[in-house]
Length: 232
Ligand SMILES: Nc1ncnc2c1ncn2[C@@H]1O[C@H](COP(=O)(O)OP(=O)(O)O)[C@@H](O)[C@H]1O
Ligand SMILES: [Mg+2]
Image (tube, rainbow, N blue to C red; front, side, top):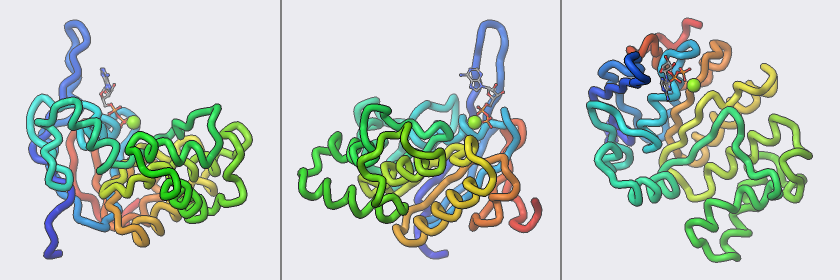
């Protein structure tokens, strides 16, 4: 690939200190992700997936090393710049969906655009487009509790794309779903990465979902390595 990497992770180390105990969650992790790639990060529970995604998305800072996303050096950014990065450059999808219960599906999708002060007409138009993209145009006015788990995650995915992020960070997006729904969500992510041209980093410990990725990174005890695509 000739293009510049969208994500550069270099020698990232993260140590959690709780009292006298130290947990080395990331050990000099390095990798690059290129525009339009879907990269799966595979590893068992406690291997460091969430910690890694948090350093990349600017939710936390490492003890050493650096992270660059779309030319922004995340690891040296001040908090207000990080807020802008998380609003405009990175879209997040979480295992627990993270929707606002009192808002409809459409209103949830609109939240990041309100924060970005997108004009109301443009916002409404993009909400309709995004809900159609994830197959929920008929469910725009329903609240999260009136939707299934898979539908909630579709709303969350639509919301994550609201401000046209360059990077999608998804932390076990299928972790609360049954395997068939989980696979549909992975297929949706796969299709969106193609159609929207975003780069996606998807953490999962589900080997069945790995086959849809362009590349697989394996993390074990905070050590990251490139894995062969076919093994599972
Ligand atoms: N806030 C924290 N304080 C202390 N230890 C933590 C914290 N978050 C994670 N850890 C530890 O860091 C390691 C990696 O955790 P995590 O990144 O959550 O793994 P995964 O997402 O792969 O399950 C684990 O040993 C976990 O117990
Ligand atoms: Mg995790």
